[in-house]
Length: 224
Image (tube, rainbow, N blue to C red; front, side):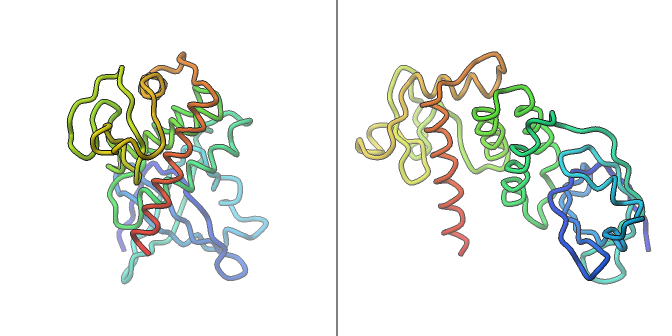
């Protein structure tokens, strides 16, 4: 069986039997993979101190003879990717990344890495929204803030738009219905994504969180 080595980010670890874990990881060059970490739950396991979420990991694993789950051989924990006080917020990013980059998708590592960087350099509330939105943008779930997502017309940043059915729409397409997204709101979203020095008002953060929430809800309904 061939061995592989790669940088990785741990999405989650699920108990398996009395002593092992099933790991879901995003890797830099192999996409999302699942690995069995045998004995990882034992007190003296060399994996216990290394298998940490929100850390840069380097892993080595053995590919399976059959099926899709390989076996972890070695893991090195290199560095934390968030400050201690933002680790709980980082868990939210892991949960969203697990949905955005499912099994079989050859992406996710760089997107989650960049999202963690976004969160680390911004206030927690607006940083979580910006980080999740950046992953949604990379995954193709959302568009930009300068075009109507239905008619594709460019909408000047001085104009109001509407969030309707998980789409950012111009006045014509929305027919004045949905959640109002003001010109200042759109400018702030755009600037906050690219500039960590731009602060976001609480009211704008609440609107952004509602847009994110409705997008994930619509996705779940679509795939149920």
